[in-house]
Amino acid sequence: MIGNFTYHNPTKLYFGPNAVESLGDELMKYGKTVQLIYGGGSIKQSGLYEEIMEILLACGKNVVEDGGVMPNPTYDRVKLGAKRAKDNGVDLLLAVGGGSVCDYAKAVSVSAYCEENFWEKYYIRFEEPTCKLLPVGCVLTMAGTGSEMNGGSVITNRAQKLKIGHVFGSDVMPKFSILDPQLTYTLPERQMIAGIYDIFNHICEQYFSGEDDNVTDYIAEGLMKAVISASRKAKKDPHDYEARSNIMWAATWALNTLLDKGKTTDWEVHMLGQAVGAYTDATHGMTLAAVSLPYYRYILPYGVKKFKRFATEVWGVKEEGTDEEIAQKGLSAMENWMKELGLTLNISDLGATEEMIEGIADATRVQKGGYHVLTRPEIVKILKESL
Ligand code: NZQ
Ligand code: ZN
Image (tube, rainbow, N blue to C red; front, top):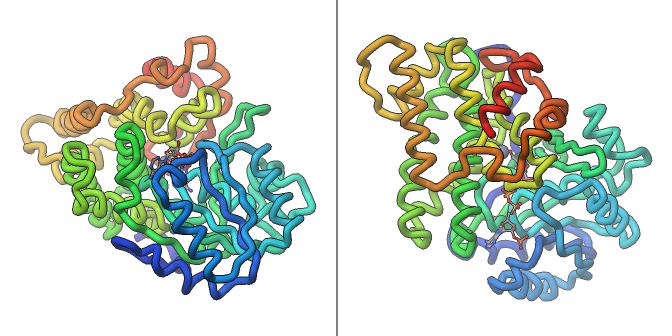
């Protein structure tokens, strides 16, 4: 294991069917005014909005509505939400939805009382908040990002064509999250599989780094196998509770600060995917799927040992041939699984064009923790192969 680390995750989780019944107990810990944050309407269609509203009113809360948060939430939208929170003296930000809604709530939390331009401070200069923070609680309706138990908040600045994530510290993580796998049943299949690939890639991003014998990698392999198995069952039957609950729980553990312990971590697929997202506003998991294979095939020679281990341990590839051949077979097995799920495997299908490539390359941040640090020409090459 590399270096010293501190492990502390303050988010309290309520997991399982009807976990939302615990919301009242949590609400009692906060003041009277709750900003109810949700997306474009799925919670109204499913009936969850009414259920949450009843609980809020039964707890005597003043509700400040903040609906219509878009997928890939924007800087302009956060500005509105932050003003709303400050003007109304909000005591709790309650996010009901997927990663976008949770990320947005965290951005509002750190921005409502921020005296400076919060985009510049948090997303360009990567400074930590120094102002008063508002507590965030979350009722999750989509599994994928892990936002329910981490400090991540990814915001898109449309004017600057940048999509950037800041991973805030434990003060910004949700105080509590309610995880009822049944709430994910209404997700369209495309969102479900995008979320599944997001989970899988979060694990890969942390796994594909380092060459030591590290307990975290064994945990990662177990989680990857669980995601592959559950994904096949959920694709066949979206109402398979066992599969949906495994997907939801794996999503949380894939990105709740456990899997980076003792790891340098890569995250270059996310940097490429986010840059594609800044230009196309495409679904996050799909942007990752579309750049993953060209990226991994490109860096494989720099990390053959780990890609071979990925092939044999995760995909059951037999140890026949050279290390590189075995490693390649692992990526082929992953490609077959991605096709089986129906993931988008190129960025043109997400709206990216050849003319955008230079701009997307400019928007791609280079990470240093993986097996190879990309140069700009290499980024352009990988993006072109992803078209
Ligand atoms: O807006 P509504 O109407 O609710 O519809 C949403 C949205 O259109 C819909 N949806 C969610 N739950 C549903 C549902 N539809 C029917 N039934 C349900 N139960 O699904 C669509 C996508 O929702 P969204 O929240 O955007 O998806 P996701 O959870 O994938 O979040 C994506 C955002 O999270 C960021 C991404 O970059 C993107 O901006 N990420 C956050 C991370 C973090 N906090 O650590 C890490 C990730 O790598 C990721 O970057
Ligand atoms: Zn992701």
